[in-house]
Length: 137
Length: 281
Picture 1: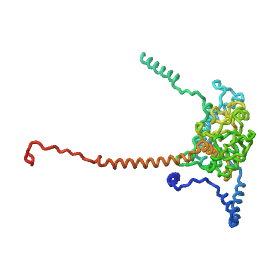
Picture 2 (picture 1 turned 180 degrees about the horizontal axis):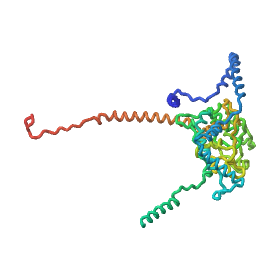
Picture 3 (picture 1 turned 135 degrees about the vertical axis):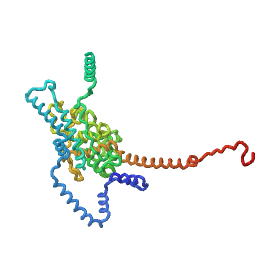
Picture 4 (picture 1 turned 30 degrees about the vertical axis):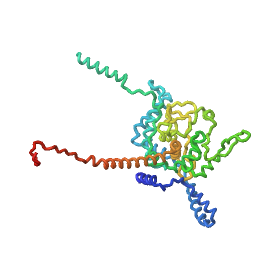
């Protein structure tokens, strides 16, 4: 599709009678027509009905779920990220254990799990990115 | 005996040298560096693609309803939205919602007037000091050129907006008033997570998940940083097509013009010597 877009774009760009147009303003034009001529009244009524129906459909939607969180959770559990997840979980256990009074590693008394978290997040994001873009508009 | 000692010393000194100079040094810890953003397959980045203007419109809505309470977008006037995200009338209506200073009147007083298309988007704070005072000392940066101004561009901003974890990893100590965000260098950022699902209601009915809002607003910010992008790509394509045609033409013309010279044959027939020719010399 992108390939053919290129050609149509080039053609449009090359044609001297090509026209750049701001989108929209259609509904307003319709309003003008209605004001100027009363003949369009029947059309007006028929146009309004489908719009109302659409609005009702939108209201029924349940709460949206964030696809990014969903895909990343899946990715964290996947085989691809299992080493990173393993290290992160281990670190969490070690650090929270240290808080609870277990013997602390003397070499690293103030350890945090930022690095392990980075590796896990990097892996999960990498894995979720294409799926996420397919799901978003 | 001497040989093995020499070998040991050699290997030992090499090992010591590697120990001292061989390992890579980092001036910063990974946390200070920040997590590098993931590359996302942005549609508008492709050579032959334009901005998705429906997304720009959604993105502007997100900026207006969410970001604009702290971040300015001072380089964008209302007129530049016309034909990009909004129609003239819509842009005018939005401009009129704000008040701007007039020119001094006859008494030298400066009054207020409703905004016009030529006015710039209003700043949320009077000046930087007011912005700092309202935000615990942290200045919310202007977003006009933010996509160009940050390493990683769109990917960085998208990751930053959607990257706040539920809770920071254990062991992390943050200064007062800072939030944990892995993508922000140093991981402590003054801005809290702002994008939650269904925070805005899109006109076109797109489900407003937080990543959808982040994607739209990032694309909008990319537009605000490079409003000329669509035109630039189109112009670039024209330039490539026309110059390649002209190059081919000029090569052909050169070969055409030179063909008699390149294909000519210079022959030299020496005069016959010795006087025994057919002419009887």
